[in-house]
Amino acid sequence: MPHDSMEFCARWQTLSLAEQFGNIGSEISRAIKWKDRDLGIYDRTIDRAFDLIDLTITDPRWKHRLKEITRFRELLGDAMFGGMQYQTSFEALERYSTQFVMMKK
Image 1 (tube, rainbow, N blue to C red):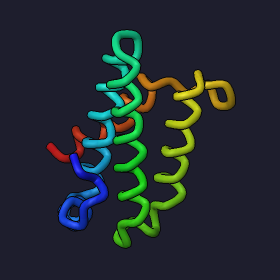
Image 2: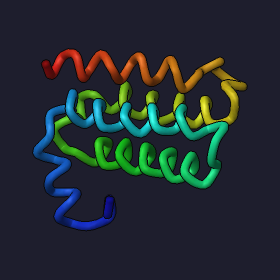
Image 3: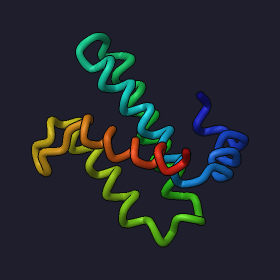
Image 4: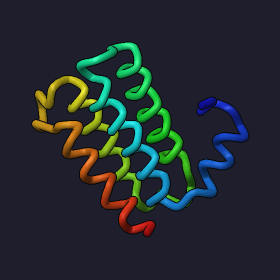
């Protein structure tokens, strides 16, 4: 997925916050799946999750939600390093983002 393309960025900004977090959660789910199987795929899924979070941060509609979104980004980084600072796990972030998918439905 070309997350750096202008077309993708424009399309991303048409999604609701629930849809954006749902997509981020999908990348986290993929990371969980590949973490112990293929580190290359795992790394790419984490990179995509960060890319999507960064696109969400730049979406002007969510400026009033920046604290929540940037904290989620920080927690993803913590999970990546084994939850050393906040004891965050990928599973906890997946559960959090799944709530957004449920909101969408």
